[in-house]
Image 1 (cartoon, rainbow, N blue to C red):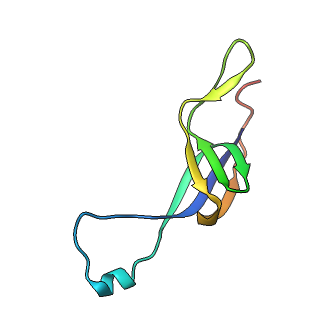
Image 2: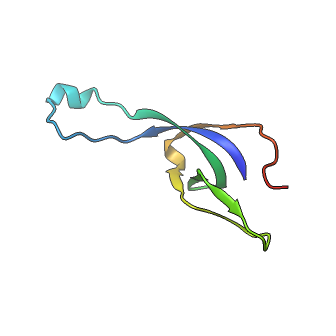
Image 3: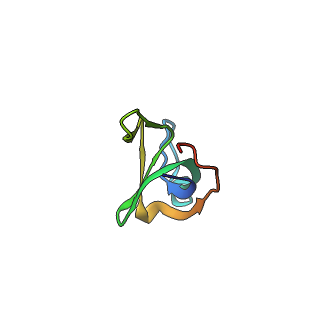
Length: 85
């Protein structure tokens, strides 16, 4: 897995009311998520913040985030030393 920063446009919600003019001026929230790139496919990307390698030389993740392709602005690939070697 490669470390990445994914810049994407996120939806948002609020508990307080808005006027029609405020609603017309709303935009997606530009967001940056960092993590290990588990999968980069046609529908989107899957990131994890934690990964592991066990004694049987298999690996997995503890959590994940999925970001749909249409929401992604760009993906920055980071350079880090190999963690499990």
